Image (cartoon, rainbow, N blue to C red; front, side, top):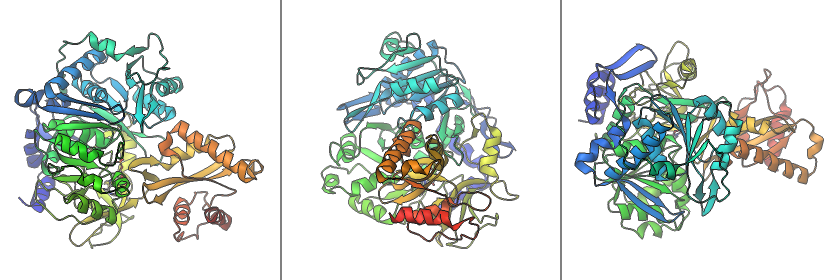
Length: 630
Ligand code: PRX
């Protein structure tokens, strides 16, 4: 079948299409209907069906491939390599599940996982869904404040953490941060399970609350924990992501729809086969890690690589060594990482036998043409850009070589994935049908299986955030600008809102502004994303002080800038730290008081600031210009 026909069927006959795909996973009880769309825009897939994500990821494979590799852990930080077969993974996950059960975790309870990239993090995810509980993984780079916000929203019964992670040879404390987040939280968990790696000798222990995982595990070595069968729409996880407000949204994912969608992507997009190895270079704290370090590869019977380390340490050949050693067939990475590699000696790629590798997928941020051509040339393999979001959990736009091979176009994530009715709309809601016209990328609901089903605990916010961008049209907005060329290939042009993308990490400028605003000297501020050669974008801040006399000298300003950056580090983590905090005396605003972020961004990038007729006072713009000129 060709791509066009495949996609058409998925949109026009969703019941038949997804009914067929549902066979890719195990159902303990068959569903009674494929789709319930009686309450738009909420959709329920595979209604009445009972399944379990962990069963599909592990148990289902035991009979056919129990002794084959399932999880390959490589840490260049601790010089550890360990391979778990499906049977060993099964045992470890049951031990973790038993520990959680003993701590009172049951169906629907939340478990917050704040962990470095170690196998126990993945055991914890799988163990949680095994017992019908809901995990929320928080990226290890987030600071105590961000963690506390997520604790208060998800209200976990138990947290699973580690004493420390390792980055570039240095220990990064996790447990200290967890303690601080619990101190800040209004609804702290009753128990904290710690995987102690012996990396932080000063790790504090709170008696009665903090428990050592190794000790608990020892008591459950042979405990069997059956999978708890859950209805298809039962939440499997909550993953927080940034938006336009200062408060991250808890993206809620179902169970059955997610399992089916991932299994279908493994077949039609990634073309990964059972028994092979998949290597995603992401982190389990991001959606790519959930979908393609953990569930996707395992559901399809592939071994997955859990890599703790940097792409260039001990040398820039490390990824390709992993490909060689574990015969990786499919890789998934991000453009920033490829741009980092591009600056290194390409001989490192040639040093290893990467003949097992069929293709590489990249996502998370715009992939520039030069980088795309460079990596395709170096590898001599197809490198596919594909486009998606935390909300969707899997690709919205992608080449689908498992359906039909199609040439790649540098800079384009290709075309709509099966199940997505993608359109481009003008801001007034008019559909764009002509090639090369810019519009907002939207999806006509119902969203396909596996996408977010709501915002955790906030159905109204789900509808309000995603479905009210256009007058008289209830469509899902991606908040990305895009164009489609005459061959149907899409190109993504950047966000329509205040979300920025730093090295593939999605951040809300409002969150950074709130952190800066918490400094007592700051009256108001604006943060914008500024184009960066390596990281795609970097946040840049402009702050107005309550009393400008405290920052008159260069030294005073430098000291203040450092302090403000420290505030961001403490609130969000270093990933949110602005490249600069410019101290100015006035922000450019419209007459109604709205900060003109787009104009600030344009000036910071050396572009024309655009229409300034709504400006209240020219002085604000001049301030930005002179700050940049310095
Ligand atoms: O702006 C788009 C950008 O990243 C956003 C989603 O980020 P996140 O929720 O972290 O999910 C990443 C999942 C891969 C999008 O709204 N983005 C993602 N992929 C691409 C992209 N921009 C351009 N090209 C892409 N391939």
